[in-house]
Length: 353
Image 1 (tube, rainbow, N blue to C red):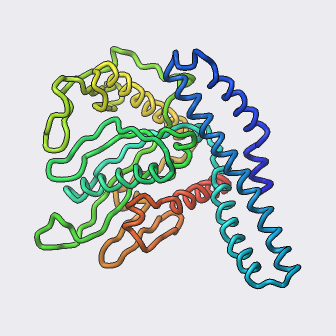
Image 2 (cartoon, rainbow, N blue to C red):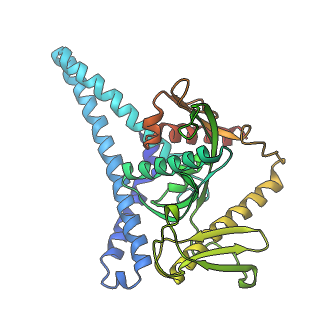
């Protein structure tokens, strides 16, 4: 716990909270809503983090007192209570320790997540929709705000792709270990012969760009298409051509946004997504200069997690070996164990290199 407190630097955290409190109390705070949102969001996050650490420190002190009391009175019930609390505190310290492992350049950023159907036809589109729900339910469980920027629905069921943002500090560092190919094995509900089907969906996680990021985009390199937003089955969700699709001609990157009523707002949001993708592309190019080139492999070779619903029930991460026997709970957003194991595994890989 002492090492965690040292890494988190509680004195600096308290100083930052005091500074943000002053900023939040400024009468002209909401003259700039975007800046105000960042101030209040950062303040709320830091207050929550500090409260979590202080509460855990109190619990550690209290459990020590419980053990001393049990020893002094030779009370089996109190000793049992102390041992139960010790297990719970140990788990809470482990979870908090994971937060201290997020020290990458962009780890403190919000996260931009894209889920795409890959091989597997309609089953893959259905699986992609399940993964989208899994991540949004995970965010709901933690009280994290999310906003879906764009959804491309598949014809029969599910989605071709969806892009959403998780608006909380350290969302990128936390969710970046979810990037990769996810594999689903089940009896297909879309096969009238009830055969087992393997399908794939890809997850991409990017850091949200900030004003300090330098990504130059020449307007002449962009093709801008506007179209009418639509929902499942082609049902119109508004009656104007407000959805925007941007194509970055030099790289071929295409992004869309249809969540806002205004074409201007949709274009601005799409530009932010495009900048995030170009920033990630720059990072990958820089990393490629230092790393040996590796083949991407097929969907089979590139998978990072397997969700098996038949003939047995299990979700297993193929990098960390972490697994659980309740796929439904995982698909309902209970993925903290996978995320924590992934963060620890990544830190080990970085240390080994």
